[in-house]
Structure formats: structure tokens, C-alpha cells
Amino acid sequence: MKSTCLLLLSALAPSAAFVAPSQSRTTTALSAEKSRTEFLRDVAAVGVASLATAAGASLPAFADETLPSGVSIKVTTEGKGPKPDRGELAAIRFASFSGETKIDDVFGTPEPYYTRVGSGGLIKGVEEVLPMMRVGDRWVLTIPGNLAFGPKGRPASAGKPRIPANAEIVFDVEMVGLPGKEQELIELIGDD
Image (cartoon, rainbow, N blue to C red; front, side):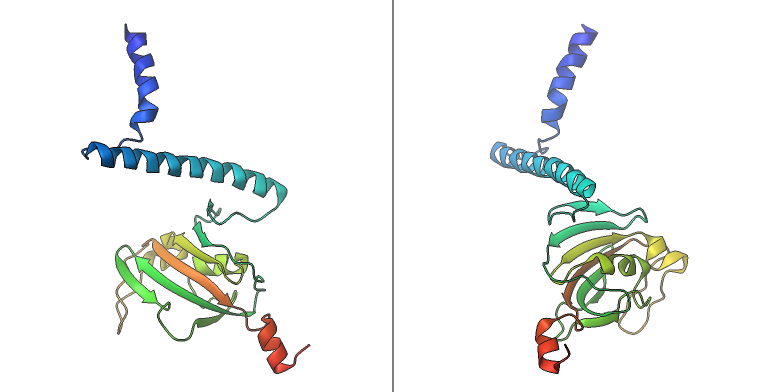
């Protein structure tokens, strides 16, 4: 009897994982279908990412990756442009959050934020990832506290919120340009 119950539970458990609790039957069915779709997408992403990594290719736009440092990458838009070299000027747009608190947001500004790749001008987790991005890429990074503001955090300043010690930072970043590699600028300046 005990083994029959265990067998029945093991058969029902996977399907129970896709059912949303305390909702109407229609909503539950939609949630279950959505969850199944997300589950299958995630399984496919892992398979494709494993094959791509083994073949030395880059990850597809729907894949997630966690670097050995602990920085988590969610690719939301895959760009086709060039990658920056260390020391090269890069134009980025970004928004950063500590929990629900917005730290900074450059998406709504007329000009992007310019930074030299590898210069240390941004938090360590972002500095680690920028050389991996292509122009047109938009990634959501989850950065552990030790690669963000560390054990001291950051005190509040004019227009900037306080960031607690070892706070995990979510950084939505888009590589919008590499002034040294953009063909239109090279043609305009005349630098061959």
C-alpha cells in the first residue's frame, strides 16, 4: 500500500508543479499552460546553451548564464554589432536597482553614458560583463554584493539613495555604440 501511494504521488507531483493555487479553473489552466511553456523553453535553453558552449558559440537571446564570479546574465535582446576591446570607449544605457530602489536610470536621457571598457568606472560585476557584449545587446545582470558596492555599501548622497552593505544589484544594460568601431562615424571623420 505504501509503495502504491508513493508511486501515485510521484506520478502526480510533476503535474501538480504546474498548477497555480487558489485561482479559477480557467486561470489555473492558463497558468499551467504558461508554466509548461516556460519549463519547456528553459529545458531547450539549457540544451542549446550546452551545445553552443561545447561548440564555442555565443548563447542565444533567451538563455540565462551565471558566470563563475556569481554574476547572472539574462539576455533580453541579442545584438549583431561588434564587441568592445579593453580600453575602448563604449556608449551604454542602463538602469540599476537595489531591491525595489532605483539607483540610477540612463534609458530616458538624451545621451547614453560613455565609459572606457575595463577602466573601473562602473561596479565590478558590470566591468566584467561589458567586454562580452555586442552593440545592440541588452542584458539584465544580477550582481552579487561583493561585485557591486561590497561590505560598506554606499551612503546616500544628493539624488542617490543609500545602498546597504553587500546588496545584490540588478543592472539592466544596453550596449548602444562603440564610437571607435561605428562605420558611420569612421566615414564622417575620414579615419581609415
